[in-house]
Amino acid sequence: MPELPEVEVLARHLRPALRGKTIRALNVRRAKVLRPTSLRQFQKVLTGAKFTGLSRRGKYLLFALRSKTSGEPVMLLGHLGMTGKMFLARKDEPLPKHAAVIFDLGRENFIYEDTRYFGRMTLDLSAAEKLGPEPLGQDFLPEMFAPSLKRSRQAIKVKLLDQTLVAGVGNIYASEALFRARISPELAANKLTFAQIKKLWRAIREVLAEAIAGGSTVPLNFAGGKSDGLFYFGRAAETPDYYEERLRVYDRAGKPCLTCKGEIRRMIQAARSTFYCPNCQKVC
Ligand SMILES: [Zn+2]
Image 1: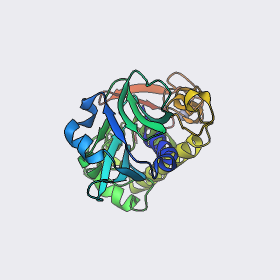
Image 2: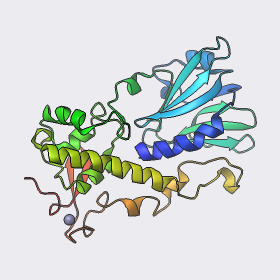
Image 3: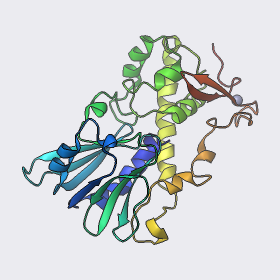
Image 4: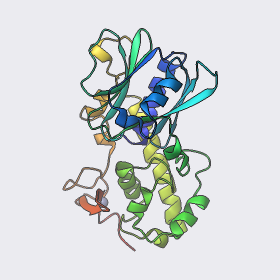
């Protein structure tokens, strides 16, 4: 499942590839992913619009465009959900079976593919507007993070997944950051000392920054296996050793802790897996 670093790496690759391209036509095969935007509205606003920029907010992509009819700026929100991929492909390549939205850019198609259709490609920006601060941004500070934690009795691992607390921390990096900060995932958020909060704040930033740096050094796979500059996101992420070796606890249950050689454990918190080292991350 794509998390903030994967979305950031994708945004960096798509940004120059899309800039200046005009949407000549739209082919929506799964109107579900546009919700709550109607197919009619989507077509009306985006047909003829030109891509002017791309940014990331949490795990969302924000595509900036300029409308053909009004000349006004338009924002389009993309989310990969569980299984989404967004990539450019040459016109003569067959469309993938689960292509949900196809943007005809002339020589290429920009494709949003999703086998489970849990992602989004919509004009409704409300999901991104509710997000907390960017974890790598300058406005995410321990002094701001602390009061939000002090108000919560939820286990810290569960609280970290609250996107209004901090945007884009998902299940993988929540476990990784807590391990790095040596904090038990079961500790109630309001029981963390300020020293622990500072350690956790730093750990969140480190695990995400390292994952982005690692992701951007992965050899890219190109559509059709040809080096035509069309980034095909998703295949790299499915290749073993893509990021697994960077993860110290996530999906390592039963394996030795890289710090103490004890056994990494898995438990379920709020219906999601948590991975941790009971020796390095004591509740105290
Ligand atoms: Zn350990």
